Image (tube, rainbow, N blue to C red; front, side, top):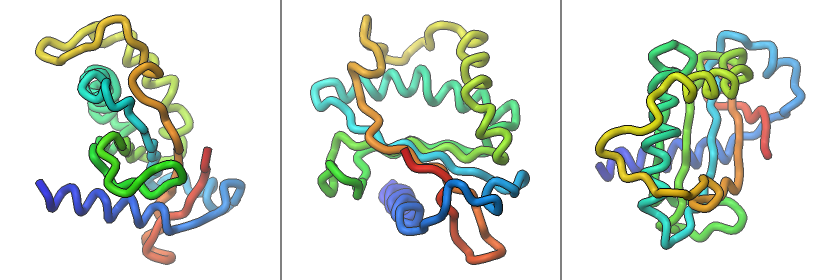
Length: 165
């Protein structure tokens, strides 16, 4: 378990160190390269388990279905992450990183439409998952930063930042 957390933190730090240009024709012109989307989330401390239940019942289920359909290659939720972004403290127990690896740029650009259609098709609740009643995602957590990367393995062995919100 500690090895997976360390690997996840290493991967996150690698993403943060590598830079790029969001408007680069070179970055957008690589349709077959995997694209990574990272969301850095700050959870309201008293609602941590509610947020985890919400992410299990929504974020994780939607990505699992998108993976079956081939648009998503992989996805990870790393909690208790040592996020190094403005406004975060190292080792903040209320920090979560949501990572999604998309098949290519087209899959990433169409992901919101795909996720919405998956949400409509899936059953409204998952048995056995704690679900906070009457709470919206914004009541449970706040997305403090989002980044999008494209893999550039044969050129420089790293990732190229495409967008930063």
